[in-house]
Length: 96
Image (cartoon, rainbow, N blue to C red; front, side, top):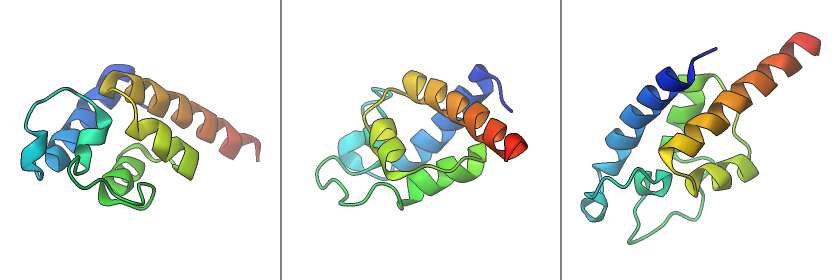
């Protein structure tokens, strides 16, 4: 499991990797939605490359509701949610 700071730092790297692919997203507002085109938003967030990178980086499974929640969050809030998801999913694995 990761600390909040390490989650944030790793998430910021993922965010920058994807944000920089879209010229309309040059302003660094630290909004998760900037990992996708804001001129032509995706129809599907859950199975997109940014979300797959997040799942892989943090060892979590993101469902459709989580994907939409993360899309609408700031990086700070998203890091908190990812931290909670790690704890929750880890607890389900150890109990199950």
